[in-house]
Length: 240
Image 1: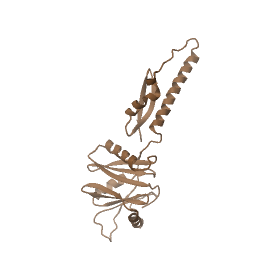
Image 2: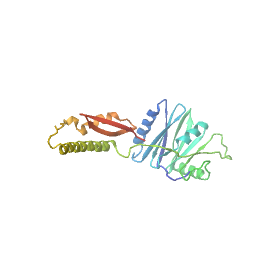
Image 3: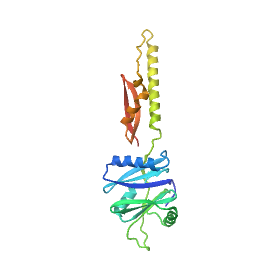
């Protein structure tokens, strides 16, 4: 089933009756709870019937199987989806209108991988890892398979720069900016001593931590912390 850029773990789950933002938040939380590390982990969601199918990767290039997988499950709801997951295979089926599944044991996974390796993919995969969907009503003498390719870019579970580190860097830059501005005013106005701008402890950059955390959500981060006209302003951006 291909092994180029293969993730160490590929996991799936289904959420019913939720909004997209709730599905994204749950998938991210699930990845953090389940995987050993979130540094090189990815997540994605895709609408399917009355809910959202979510996908989590540990390692790998961060490309989602969901677009092809959802298309094939919708067209073949009685089929079996097989997706590579490191040295194992994740098997996904539909029961009572809901996709369910889990990782096959290593022995069963090796057997399935050998069977899949003997079958040619029905779509161009360019050397990337790929999965297969076996549609229902396939007899032993028939080979009808649909290829599942990793095509869509996934979201990172953890941003490359953590929020605490980003806040510290922004706070340091803000303090340095205030110091530089004061020095410039003093230098260019030798006959006038500028009135110092006194800050209380509560106005210091590190005391803005709780306020900054309250402004961000599961898919955003603090992009700018600036002190101007006697108050702090916090700007956020959405993580991609």
